[in-house]
Length: 268
Ligand code: NAD
Image (spheres, protein in one colour):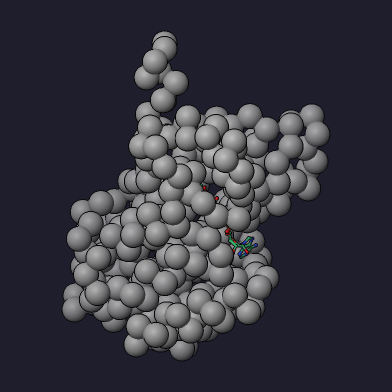
């Protein structure tokens, strides 16, 4: 990825002290952006991410906020405008799972996942868009007035037994993203999603931490390897850059072919 692809741009990544968000924040910094590292718990890890980003000679700071809380998201974005002058790239990445069979799933488990994974993305997008509209296009920075990248999942389209809250949240992210993309494209704001397959992070440790679990998981991945956080981070950097300026309202699946219905390779 060219080192200066995002030079002068200001990015915010939610849930950026772990897994995909961490790799993405670092990749954006490496590409020349100043980066706000959002976290909800884990200040020490967030500080390490900030230090690594500052090593690229760009600016960074950590900001604690729960993305599902309206007031906390609006304070987070207005502080960014105070400190960095504006926001060009919002990566709505924060997410979690609270798995259970439907008959065991509590309303609290359902609500928590919807609040963070779906409402959180709405709130982050809304606050970023207000600033994009206020500032408009600055041609020497980017052809777009702003970019929103929603972190979706293959479960945007793949049903997932035992995870009805999570799959519903990501299905919702698909329509959130497309509707915002339609509404905001005339204002030169690009809204898109990156949808990971199985990526080696704490969220899905059970699926890859033993050789048996990994072998099972690989049956679902035609390309024959579990993804790394950098696979997603690189996709986000590309999606945020002017290289992909004409990509509007798209979901980019980064999944080693998981959405190719691999069970049909030998049957069906
Ligand atoms: P992770 O658990 O390593 O990271 C999730 C991050 O979100 C953490 O930093 C966590 O603290 C943060 N977070 C949780 N609730 C928050 C809140 N209320 N406010 C702010 N931050 C909050 O997991 P990950 O795999 O890096 O997941 C990142 C995103 O990628 C999620 O949206 C997840 O659904 C998506 N995803 C992951 C995979 C995968 O295989 N790892 C696959 C598809 C989609």
